[in-house]
Image 1 (cartoon, one colour):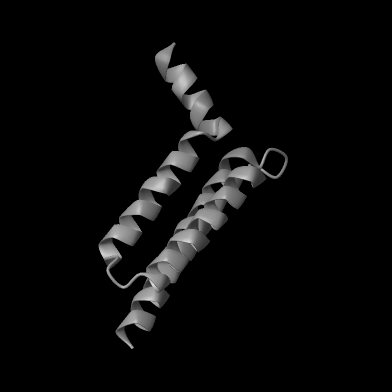
Image 2 (cartoon, one colour):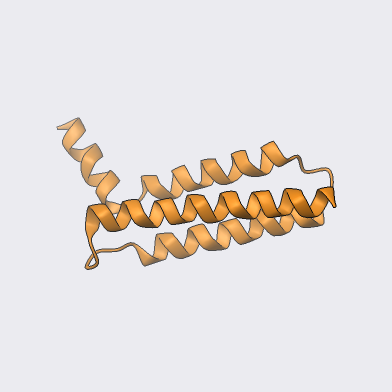
Length: 91
């Protein structure tokens, strides 16, 4: 029961983070320049982390959530709005 509850909580976190990423990117870029590749990478990464959590009992919940959060930040850093913002910040 505990394993199922932890997997459900991790799945909710992955879905919430992915949905917030999609909303933020759509709000900034609109429909024309939406980063579908980055969104796909985020979904695949979430599926991999959830499956690893389900397979290995020794993986802590905080480790799984932290690794997906860092992965989401890494994916978000390479989208065009963030790169444009960094370019204007440097110049």
